[in-house]
Length: 207
Image 1 (cartoon, rainbow, N blue to C red):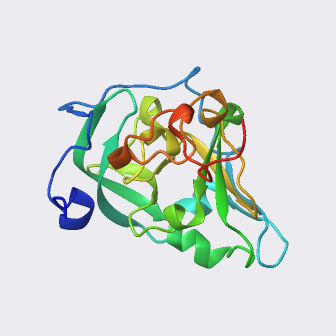
Image 2: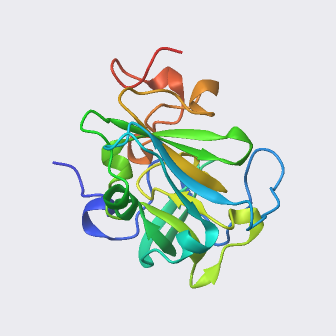
Image 3: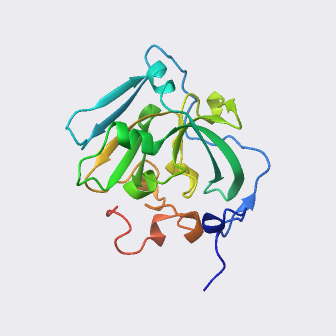
């Protein structure tokens, strides 16, 4: 058997091909959106258990149970930030408040400007997947995703959009923004799933 990874031991180890990053570079596609609290809402829609969508204003979402988790951030550009403390609303909390229908297998995270990222339901429901408003006890800056970014520590960071505005429950997989443009459909950094040409049979819809 091989050596256990940090996902199993909690130790700070780097996935293959990654380098340790001490700071936190700003990386994103497109402009930084302006936050307008009176117009902001978070939606859960698609294949919900009751067929209805759920919406929260920014004030309502900020009042949901707040949890801190420690999780790495692995960028596909090959830098990793280890052991960051994220604060926000667990994905599991939303799954409880707005449960998916029995046949749901995937979630699409939607963000400003129509950006999207598809995630398997099991990855979304992982114990450290969090809709983060804080890092290290401080509010996120606009450049890093304020007021809300999705953090999925065990996947590459493009699977966790900045400026996230909602999730869609899906009964079949569908590629998101970067997945349609050549990134791997699953995005596991420990398997170096960076690009779609690396996909094996069954790992994603046809391009």
